[in-house]
Length: 135
Image (cartoon, one colour):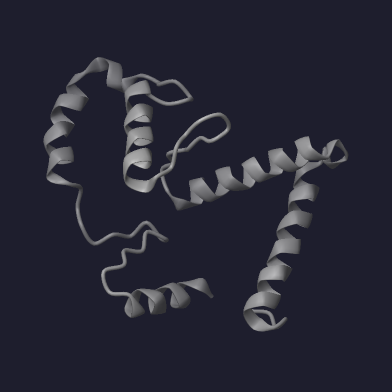
């Protein structure tokens, strides 16, 4: 069970904020609350946006990642904003599956390829963490 493990890590490291379950104990920043009425008043904000993201938001995230995290987005390096951890995980799984299918065309059945990949890495993690015992 991962939840008790994460809870123990949080206890050991005061100030840690776990977003694993999407349960936070604080509200949005005052700047965001102040901006809501203006945002909602603009009809364009109620329409579908480009799949690749709103250019101004993409640029702001890229700048933040570069300046605060030392991560430069270029070439094949991209980021995805999701509505939560489950959606992020699913997108990561789909990205891995797509890469597996492209790397080995015989893995056209991406589900089978992904299952093999995930099981292989779970076994490796399991052996590294518990000496081979199931967690």
